[in-house]
Image (cartoon, rainbow, N blue to C red):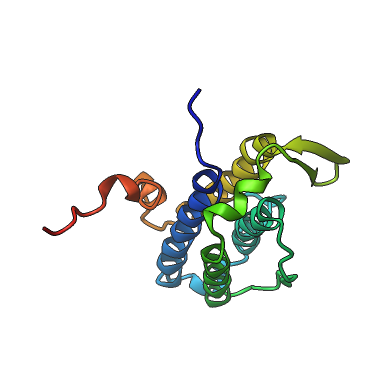
Length: 176
């Protein structure tokens, strides 16, 4: 049976999602309504753009804590401007750079206790946590952030969303 390395499916995917967010944030900063985009919601009862960014960051951070067995300092989640959100995404990328493949080896086969919003805590295997909880949430909030910007008229397409995820396929050939 083939397996996908835990590092690639967590840290690698999180890196791609965060780089996508950086691209989206840079496009948002150039928008005429840039000053108000951070508080824009797709629908009145949904969380604003700024919170979508923070949640993607927090899921990446939580994967480091849970899977690498590290305690990471508490981040305040108080970023409100596009520049503050860019800094937050960069801070998360810097955290991910500190994780090595070997750091995740011990997580395989372990269980994770996860709190799912207002629901009770649940026990999950590492693969259940990654595939059934962490990654779906990361992609959901990344997609909502993308959707908010599209709703506000930013010229974005599927390529803007997938660019970093596909980057491993299209690396420049090594020079001879």
